[in-house]
Image 1 (cartoon, rainbow, N blue to C red):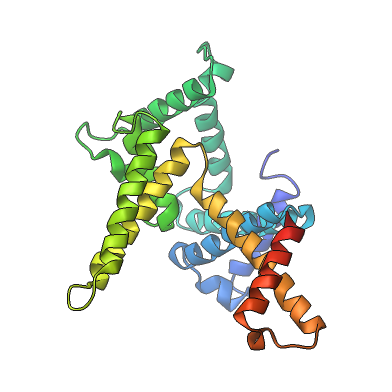
Image 2 (tube, rainbow, N blue to C red):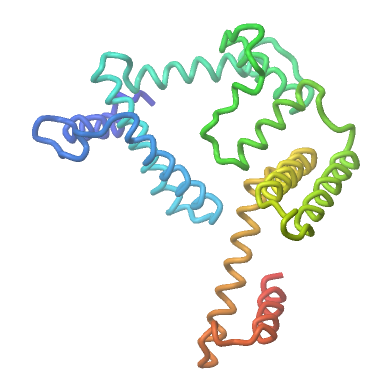
Length: 266
């Protein structure tokens, strides 16, 4: 669909009006840099809606992200750089080029072949200097867990990886023992900075466990957090129904409720 036709045209005109002389003071003062924070927030809200699985919420959050994308393109158009039409056309060309097995003569026999071709084409597009550090291509502003996953993924493509799951699990156990050693130290030998470093090593290695197991750690952690939230909410609700404040329950009573919540959710 042409972005210059309805309904995209209506969105373009709306943003032009908001940014115009008689528009909204807040919208007029925005810059690409100031909008970047809102874009991150809206993307996270979209991710949350996707994980919750509610189509109506997904539709709304997609709209919010789309609005900001059009808004950003409008600001760059004001500076005579590009407009939303050029964004769409450039991305379409890029996606066609990165799928030579669909739009060209390249033959692939696995998803891994597709992934390898993708990264080779992407590297050629970037036209990076031959000696540019490989890991420089991973955005530094990514959330820490996601960046760790991408860093380890890039490094593994060079062959710098464990031979199998057993190897990375052994490494995880090694890092875990090192963390336990630091935690077991008593003053004055106990050093919070050393503990933090070892804890980070554990997290990074577990990220590699997830990668080797074809699990995205961000998705797995989000699912585990939602599961905990659901069970904890059940505990609070049952506590209220019995006329007790959750905070006033004994540890044993909380444990009983936790086991009940766990049994119900399984």
